[in-house]
Length: 172
Picture 1 (cartoon, rainbow, N blue to C red):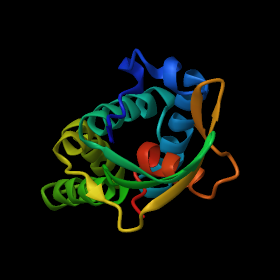
Picture 2 (picture 1 turned 180 degrees about the vertical axis):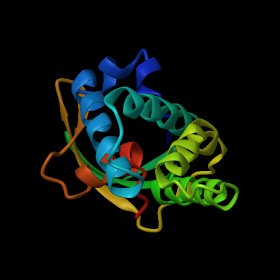
Picture 3 (picture 1 turned 30 degrees about the horizontal axis):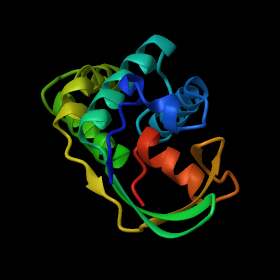
């Protein structure tokens, strides 16, 4: 089974998923913001951060992949093996750094703030040009079915890793 991550446009989200869509989206934004701050820069306005998130989310919705295979099931419980690929924040960070270096190499003022602004002005094209990176470690997720809808068992170690992968670009 292959899933596309455009949950904004998925009319069947509420039909099959028990997690609150708005809460999932809020958590995803927070995860992206943390990854961006940790890997690129933490000196970004909220408006710019939201713009970068929308660019990332759009590229990930188009390119990220998740293949799920049930490896065990019993009544309303299942263990699902996940193979996934996503847009890597490390790769984005490297490309942003290359643009900043390019600016510094071609300017006489050696202004790191201007270099950062120049590099970030390329963020949309950087993200849209990125190819997804496949995770080396497969995830196994325990799921439970409640009221006809499947949810990831919250005490599962992979819950946070999946959010970090698809919202924050962490590829394990």
